Length: 334
Image 1 (cartoon, rainbow, N blue to C red):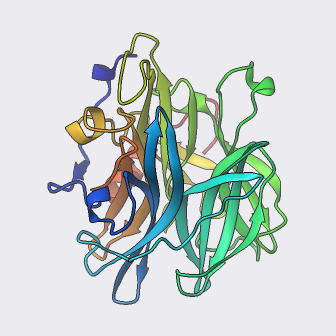
Image 2: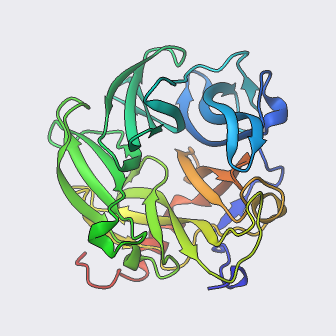
């Protein structure tokens, strides 16, 4: 695969004034802002975002925290004066990549955790988006967790990406799984949702992106996919960055949400613009983390671009569903 072979699907369009949030808009130390969680909030929208600051060298920063911003229209954002969430101690190095979900009127945030002994996924609850109580953290290695906004037979649900190396041929072959919980603390009954092989344009890994959105046809979930091309050279800060991240879409059964009905067999969003492919810390990266249904049937998709800024794209939900149903993934029953 080469970078020129993948194009964004014609059903989706980028916001013409992208990006919608950059480090220049943050009133405290900030070098990179990306991978944000969003929800409708009061008369507008709320966003929590990853903020890396104090660049040192290579991939090293002095720290990472999570900032908070509000918007009346989902496009123009006002960032709070201080970050709202950060954890660092002898074991935990940083928390990052937040997603937001409202369940039964309560706000929950999932996030990734880097520790001395592996990568973990966390879940926190908040009443006001300023104070968070951590409810649980997974064992390593598991992250990219997103919560469903509704329960299944009284149980909370999440999509997640365990990262098994030995059982997948000693290489990256990371897939999307579903699990359930009575209390957001104890998780089990895990089921495979989708494998890397279900997405023809992925050859490395896939993972949950935005929390799923319930439609008449089932749960619509925007995901990310990764392909590797050893011929790729320098992109961003690294001498060699051979990966490319795209956004994809899949449709899950409304009654049995661990079953994938179908998925887009071509990328929904592929890196194409300068802020996705050239101007960034780690280029050729599109990382979707939030989907907001609009009253007119469009779905707003927010994504991190080049691990540097936050961007926005839109598509009709009917078009996204049709994209998922055009062709069933090989070896799976609808």
